[in-house]
Image (cartoon, rainbow, N blue to C red):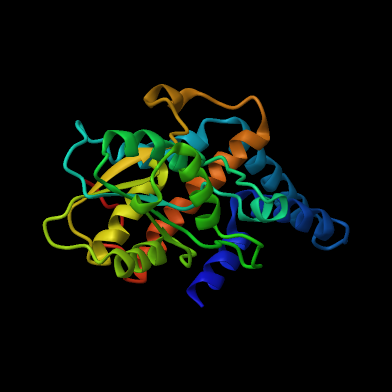
Length: 265
């Protein structure tokens, strides 16, 4: 139930969707007589929100604190496993085309080739099923397995968890599958903006010895705090991503699925 409520709820409050709905509602209301001024106010508020979210640095202001929260480890050695969170495989296109199609978060999975080479004794674990409401023809695990084979990672090192639909299920289902022992060390790979929530969730689920390995950065650093966008779709997409993550931090903390509102190192 949590999965469906989260998906539907975020669809309704996603900034780009909400602002477009506000413009449309304003135009409809302004077509009347008694509420014309109110309708125009709604419409102009929506247009202003789309312009600010699409062209200003507002999206970078939201996403940069998330990306800067966890640094990469100074050295890589002694890890028992590499846990790659789903989100990099487009299950709908993968199922339709019969070959692995990647999303804009592709680095989550492509980095596995390098990490597997640097940590030859570590298991490579991918966790992700189908994170969509309407089931597709493929799971993320299927797409990941194909890529890992292409990377030359031996099948005996690979562990695939194919049922998780969100970050909480990633942590719980993977823990049940690999049964981590005290003293073991794990490298957690996901997008930098998603790392604070991921670390809080894995710790809450009882994982120990987990080290963050953030990838898929969307900003260069603080210099992007003054950088706008040359296309509204680019800014709005990043704004949606960052807004979703902050909402996720709040919801996961309130539902007891994270150790803190803004987990840190």
